[in-house]
Image 1 (spheres, rainbow, N blue to C red):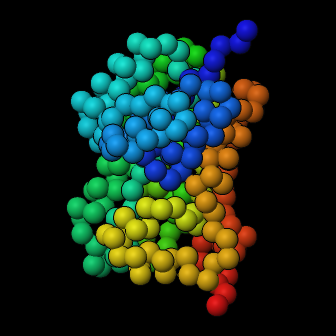
Image 2 (spheres, rainbow, N blue to C red; image 1 turned 30 degrees about the vertical axis):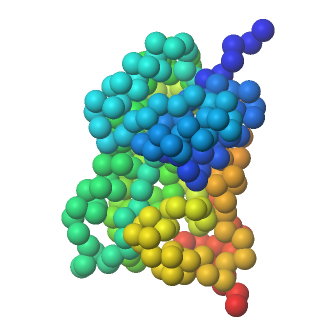
Length: 249
């Protein structure tokens, strides 16, 4: 009987992270959901059978505690680094350095912290590291300087880790979605301004959903291990490029 696969998914309290937990659990993986909001994690665990750890990826102490709990419970086969944040959409001339620092700390340094802490366990299982990038990590856009810079950092991290860990038979997979409509991402970015967040998707017939992106993650993880998805770019058909979005009234 083959060993049951075990995964850690960060940023799992909503959106793409929660959808990934649901899909991997449905494939009979043993998933540990990680996020800051225990109430959301508890609901997800009750609905799916996943376990959870409350942790903030920007906290060294939280990540150390997470790693201790994960590694003491058995082998780890996959880490899905999904935790991320976008803060406002200011042009560089108007941007606050604190907003850029927040985005860098969560998207880049949070990924570094968790990956570094769990890398020995992943090496031991010849496992997988998934990075949730973005098309913003490949092409910049007006008003997105801080977020784009952070996601470019994730892209650089993915490429470097792949080079360094190939000798350890680790797969390093980057998923780079374009326009994804989730319950919270744009709303949080615009500090609860529903009008501003809805305008992002106005007239777009079918932006990607959290489940769409989770499907890509689970597909990449379930390929034969000798096949690595270096980079998968996902966009809705209506978004032909970063700056070309078909909007219909």
